[in-house]
Image (cartoon, rainbow, N blue to C red; front, side, top):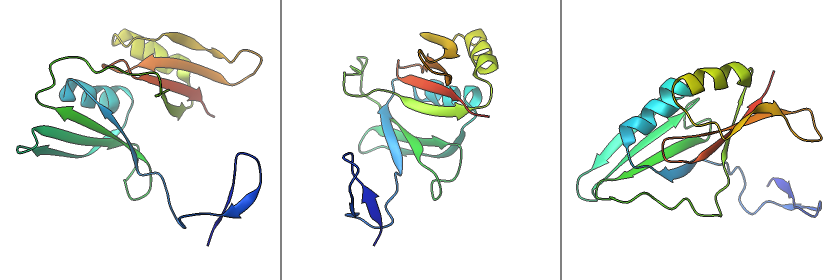
Length: 146
């Protein structure tokens, strides 16, 4: 069995051995627009897409690698949802690491992507970050990684 460190710093047995994060699900209003944002603009791949006639919803899974190896994003489109979703106050953001966020933000801005926090170092730090928003207003933190 694997061990895990708690927030307090003590080590104990993991409740579930060999567990890993599979995906994060977000609800979207325009599936094609969201797929385009995550694939064309952020460079993810559309891994699979299914339509459920009976449930009146579609699912699209996007990510940078195979679901068997990496966590991905599940985009859920409910066909009959007319109103925008309330983003709530509990969800924070997704985070993506990339080598040059200045160039990425320039390209994204040219595509009309909202950038509520321009690229730059963290206050009192050296890590360079930016925040962008997807078509539904979900925040995505870009973190520069060399």
